[in-house]
Length: 492
Image (cartoon, rainbow, N blue to C red; front, side, top):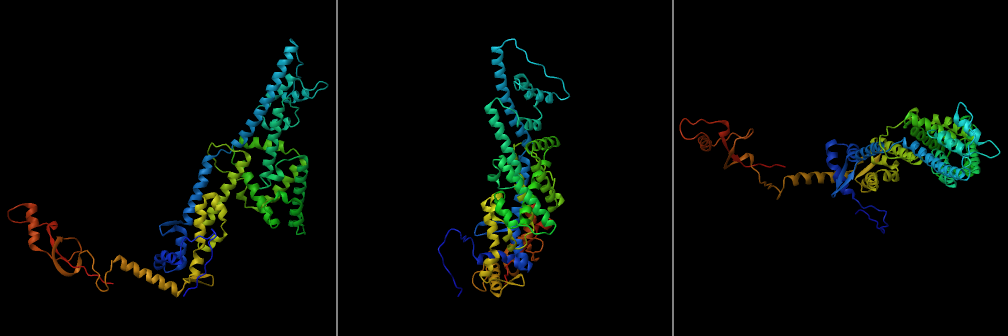
């Protein structure tokens, strides 16, 4: 007898099938191909039905991943990353302009007929306005402020650079601008350091110094690694682990993750129109004005470009939709697209259930839903269930059917044959159909190609007369022939 062990169900078990039902589902393919490996591959690729439930195959899941990528590309507008920043900057300027206009109105009411100094000519009016605003002793004049704010329209990079040192009159505009700049700086850094939102959520001067120190040590480790010199990775993680919450096990894993993030950041830029890409590069340069920080980031980017195939860098994607994105959301969409592409390629290469052990079911669930993850988990279990039941065994890395499995398949195959014959008692296989090869039954039927040519003359002549009417001669056509039915012989 097969031993059995019982335990309390804790909710994690999934009694979705037994080994007998699985082997029965495999039987037809095993008999057709004569090879268990090919039968399992077919089951994995196409899926199967079991007790009225459909287990989705990896081929269908791969097609769903491709459809997911197509949907994301058709839904979003990558240029909206830039236009969203420009809209926020425009709102800040409009808030400040309203405050300036209100103060000019109050000034004119108090001092009617007053006139301001003219702004000196210059090659760039914006430069002249900035010099005038900084002229002592009375500080920036209201009319100069108003004209300076107007000239920032259409120059987002210059607006980000200049407004950081601007003395706001509107507290609301200043608060909104500081919030915008802090958020953009954090998003720029989080493009590279996934999950480090807490460390990069508020880039104060102290946080910027910590970031530069981390980048300097990281670049030094990379140089030591290339020169085959020792480096202290554990000490680095103790000092700067807040930037790497996924806790990489070694420097190679850390750099691989950074390289993929940087490749996605480059893909975001490459997916924009040339005009929007140039604007974003200008704005990012204004945000990352710290020369040392920019130097460290550029050095890290240069070192990481060699870690991935060239096709992974600067690869733009054809976004066609209208849904707006900010920088963080754009990175999430690109990461989702990359995960879907990687998973699709992996699933298309699966040839046996054991290959699915490398699949991250949580990722499958986030991309395709819990039902898809459940089906993949069930496909993973097929080999184990058949082995535990004694139907298959592994020898030299290959699965073979055991004698017990052969007997099971034989019973299932013979049962299928006899069920199709609707067998009754042994040796008495009666069926409700007429056939050929037996005794004549006395019944007639129209002749069909392949029937025994037992012509019933009287009925044939009768059919000819009924067709053509009374009179002689009676002309017989092929469709008039009637033959006698015979009993159907069944052999097994």
